Image (cartoon, rainbow, N blue to C red; front, side, top):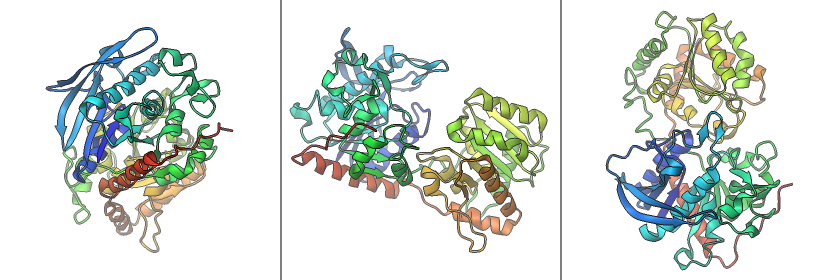
Length: 494
């Protein structure tokens, strides 16, 4: 089967979140299963290509004001996956991927419409796939275009589309006046299609037109069909419930394993945990905490500092947590209020609180390897990867029971010796603090704690199983596309 991925980011070329990790690893897993896989990406400034080769010299993309002419270059074949980049410097040669600290780029609708059209036109030349696998709102127009403007194009007869929702909170909302500029027909602007409370909603269009929809964990596929987590699209998703599947993200253990990690001070494994202590001391040194008591438990955080990630709860608890015998190290950037919170705590408790306001991949590895516990109290979390990394490194996760966090972490039971971490349900500071205190109590019994560590380290969240689940979805989507009747028209959200 030929699968063409279309996504807005991918490691190692450009990354803002977990989407990039998935696009960097899932295609390789599918190629290892014997499938033909290509990946289409925008050619951002951040994508450093050593020897790019132009494979499509010019693609014409119509806009109402003028035509735009882009090209496609390739980075070659990597681990059996052909990587293509849509090259249009006026849109993609910018400092950031989606916007600046002042907000999203004003022309994001044009940028990603051009990308979607270029992917479709490029595929005509480079190889029409059996499946277009699209990701989030930035590529949601591909299913829409295939079922509208390209509906009668014989090149795409029988070609199916799958849309993966990594975070339904980001939908690609734009004023309705954008439709003529994008050369999209007005008959798409209906309550059962792109219209969403007076705006154009690109993610909604993809949900309506894709042959199958996936989310990045089973729990999240259920949550987004509720008013609490659906961000207004729960009705549209419920109407497509028969074609919504939750598939947990896999992780790349070539990159994230304490037995091979090139960034950490010492290697270790479930059979030999001695290196964990060296990694802990190295972590403390990296945060200028050399004089901290190494016997105290270290709580690690690697995250975007935002309320969605539970930092409003952390802010409620930090002063009370400061009274506990614990060291906290945090890495990330985000809302100024939370950055300043960590800086204040470091001034008050310089031997027990430290933060690095930055994105630092090497330091993230050191936190995963050297911390005793890892905190992810998210309000919602479609999948989450750091808790999975933490399990592999014997760093016990403390999480809220939502989305992928709930699917991947099993509550610890000291009586039976089963479980991999600590969970709380209610989104309150009290519930979070209780979960942290339970972990601190468990940490005092090091013999039992090592059982807990090894339980997590033995889990396998690689793509070995999940890639095969995607193949089943692709086959289902192809069957739906070959069926005589199209997907049902969905009602407008309540």
